[in-house]
Image (cartoon, rainbow, N blue to C red; front, side):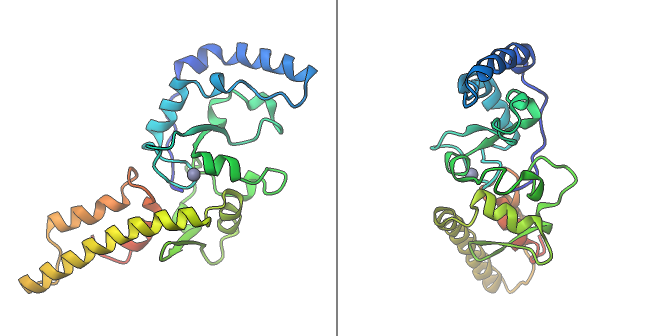
Length: 218
Ligand SMILES: [Zn+2]
């Protein structure tokens, strides 16, 4: 999870949200379990705006949404706050796994967790990594709850993080070989650039690489 900067509300939402909400609330009054129509809150224009905000990554686990399509997620669940069903600031982008596996607000409220859209938070102050395994930072209360709520320690994410870490380590080894060959300890500009790519916001699991690269001068 890294910080996501929200883009302006998509035109379709600004135009339709009041009508959509009224219609949904009416149906819900008759059928309390009624879900809002996903073709409305998950409209292509809304999904694409969220994808641009996160560089096509899940807001929670930072997995790239290329082969797997992202799903528009209600940050505060509609069962809790139906009035937020079409509220732009309540719409997040999630991979199907995070969306389905996340624990309900009743079990772990979002207020106890890190919010990827909270501009006042530095996520690396709460989450760290031990090889491919995500860990809460010592002293953080939101770190452990965030890992639990979104199951960020699930095996398939560990596996994917490991794959990306292997690429990173291969690059580090190549750089080390070149340094030995050239008899230098410093990094060339192109070596620095190739390492910095891993921690850029558009890279998969960039928080993990921010943590690892914070120990290397790049
Ligand atoms: Zn995810």
